[in-house]
Image (tube, rainbow, N blue to C red; front, side):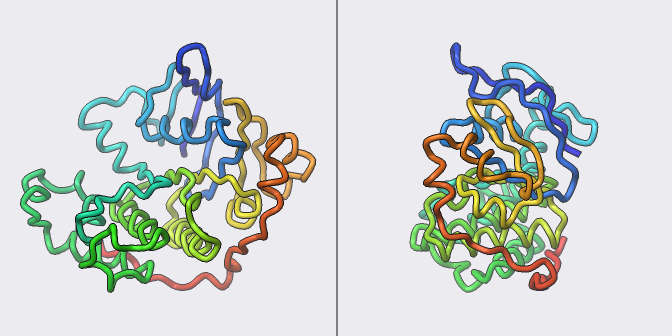
Length: 270
């Protein structure tokens, strides 16, 4: 279980995240919602320790994540894989190598520098690419892919980290509706098939309601809503989003696949 206790992050006199407390059960798909500047990205970056808390604690299965340093911190970042809005791929490298970057914490540094990846890691990476129907692109440069394809590569890279937790920071913000559905379906598959906990920052309420088991709403750095999607009424949503309400509530919904119709996936080889 992930437990957040009084988590705060200040930049100068401004609290980007202010006294956030919540817990997340293993295997949950949690959407973090709120208007721009609400503190969603800072919250996820603190969970991965890309940003350091000013106060509070992050606990994962009894380990105090906020106290980790050195090798233990690097191991935590491998267990809590980040997926970014702008993909964070190395454009000049091929797709396979970008995915293999997710294995950096599992192999000696010389292997990655020499591109001498173990065959079992190459098989793992290819299996992950195949999960998201992009295995034929393995030899292609990452910067030659569409936005949706690049984000699927980023998700495959996260999957080969063999994480306990995936933190997705607005992963579909720059994508068209078709690729938005492809990427959200990919995250849902990881969550349901592998049982990996997903925390996903989302701006669209339709997406949040369609894909997430639970929603955490943020406003001015504070958690102001924490419940199942059905409990988020239009009235509450308008208070949460204020002037952005019409924008986030007016988009056509992108429906998640029915739970009973989830496509079967092959297990990624260990």
